[in-house]
Length: 249
Image (tube, rainbow, N blue to C red):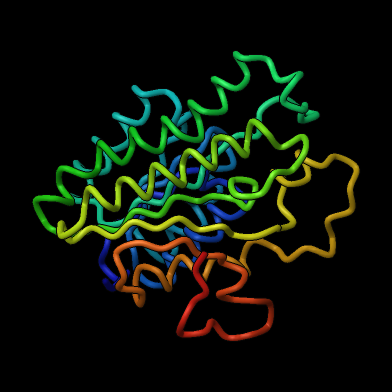
């Protein structure tokens, strides 16, 4: 699928990886539907990207089901269809991040609502028109915390593990429908979210999010397999061209 002329909905688009994906898509000619909780930062991103493409920006929390429905409804009214959904927005939970034996149940509920329920709800909202058109790409942003046991990352890791298995089941259910489903681990990055997770730790040695953003272009325009779990930094390491084949795990 060519990004030029397509429509992509990107969550968590005001900063970090979401912003860099939006910039990469705009350069390829995609029209964008963007959302994030921070209205001012989102509008700043949208204003920058409007120099290159048509952008609809609607601030709000995707864990708010009403906001998600309004977002998709507005996007379809503006562009007529949605070709790509990138579920990038997520939350860490309480800071500092507690171990599981100290994680309040209500905090875990909030993490799962934002990182699992909200992505599924957006998928449910965009799928009907993708099915009719037999065309679509769904990319759920995950983490190695979803497959590795990191002390202190339990709530976040639980949610990402659930998102990964949700994606596997979705891909199986959509077999033959013309809709591709992927999960992408962008790898460790020097982002505001990571700094929040590890307050006081020097992350300057980690790559910036723009290193991982090309993977999200590659998956839409080049990859054709119906399902995969990809490590974005393995695909596109710093200062090297993106390889044509990817490692899967």
